[in-house]
Length: 416
Length: 165
Image (cartoon, rainbow over all chains, first blue to last red; front, side, top):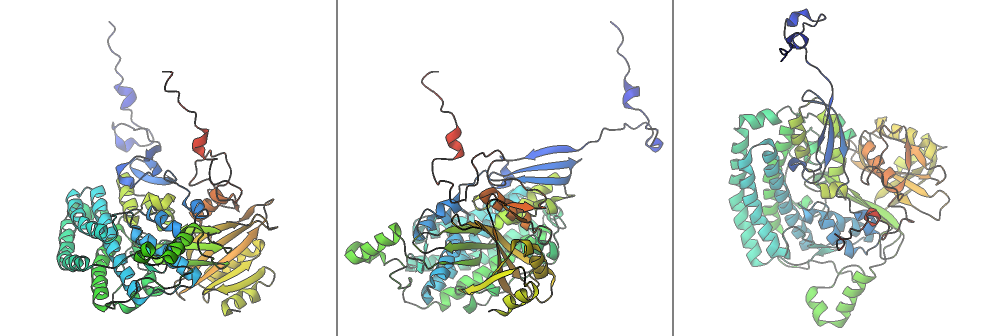
């Protein structure tokens, strides 16, 4: 048997161009292409990102999406305005209430319907509860993505209380469809009010608890502070919105800029970050939860004690449910509104609403008749993904996860 | 007419087509050739300062001579106002100038319009399908002549004959 050839010379060759490396190996370097997803636990759904890597640094990233595309905008053209409300639940399925709210507001703008005062307060109240749920969900999964597993259990424990509250309110935890064009579907009961008050007392100390878990965690800080910085100018140019934009120091919040619902009657502040990094986006959301608690509390105090929760515009809004079951005319009204729809005037409106992810807008074009001619959804998740390549450039593979996370993307809304 | 629309009309007499206000939304329609110049003005002029792009959308009007309508919604953080800019595109020359160099967020939004409506954007850095599969052969889903049912990708799958195995 021939002795094995010594190959060390070919491996440990001194590179004549870099004699200072001595006999250290000259390693082969080339760009690596890495597919992340579509089935990756940290992509919050089905999202694929193709990363061009130099070592572990990202030089370019290409987002591939559409795995969850269901043609919601096309479906909207086939149904009446009322029929589309349950579809909006399935956009951002983590925060269905806010989607309902945004859609109903757009249709109310189109139909020029004024919502009764009590309904406005109820809508604002539930929307803010939904914002807390959204931010809790975000905080838990974001921390989990980065490796801080404990927070996930704590936030999901508290989120569960609110989901059960939704269950009691409208019969569903996630796909709520509680908002109606012109108002809301049903009233708060005494039991719901009590549970919500209990939660408001219980919740604020819990926020401090999450903060302690994270802000005393050196690893978590190292992975968020100064990571994925986006300047205010770039953030605006990319069309980012919500906490992702406010983390960069722009106070664009439609609840203040184009106030709607009962927000003008509530006192709250809009937290704005400074550095535009992942940590600031986290901080904005934590502070928003505290503000949401304040808004919910104010809504409960200032809400008119009784009054209608649905506008009385029989050509557009649905009749009260008890009348539908006992009164023939109301039943016919309900039936006609769902099967034929109402006669919308020709025209087009855009209405943006500050959902917890950012500006969720509906652009509706009507040519008259009961169905929208065109309905476009301005989904914040989709637009945030447009900035991914810019924000991920130069960071590590592991940071890609924190960047999706800090957008708070939900692919149901992104792909529609 | 709204003073904002007046300013645009005075500056772009050639390219300006129409302006209207309905339900508080101001809409300015411009000619296709003037779109980029108008948007550059809207972004850069300090009196306009529309620095934020909200969405890019498209509407199909099959009976019109210029079939497609491309819709840009912009917002000015400084002046806190919205504006919708629209332009029309004929079917035989279905292309419009990309605004990616003005608002970078337009890149993904325009890709979506291309994917859904088949409108091309000149000078777009990466004009590919975005929500539909890259090899989707059936055309443009949001056009009015694309049927709602029965022409989906899944209809091209072969059925497995489970009994034969």
